[in-house]
Amino acid sequence: MQLVTIISAATLVASALGKCLDTGLRFGRGDLAMSTTKIACQLRLSGEYNGHDTREACIFFDEINQGVYVSVTRIQDNKQSIAEPECYDGLHKEVKNCSHGGHSSYDNWAYT
Image 1 (cartoon, rainbow, N blue to C red):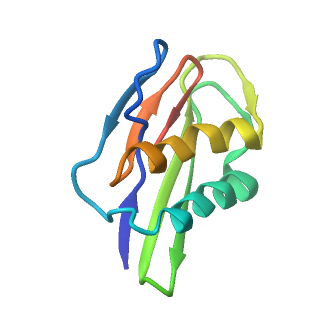
Image 2 (cartoon, rainbow, N blue to C red; image 1 turned 90 degrees about the vertical axis):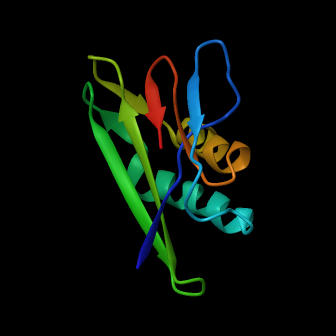
Image 3 (tube, one colour; image 1 turned 45 degrees about the horizontal axis):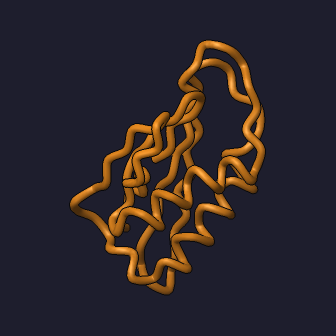
């Protein structure tokens, strides 16, 4: 099984730091990767986090014999919840803006 790391948005928003990956699965099938981020947020990544908690998900697709790894990390000390739309918004930028995925962090959350 091959794992693919989806990491960050290349768009640099004033409050965001991002870096695209140079290697890994190229998202020629962006629709598949985009649906992965939605599934991961619905099933595993949204909800309440303690400070500095990380949640991860790896979704494997038999049809392409590839897996997509995503994660969300609370980068502040306090407890806070992330709703599905915010989770999806952060993760989908990693797929949309970086052809191999990426990593970005904002004021409260880091997405891979």
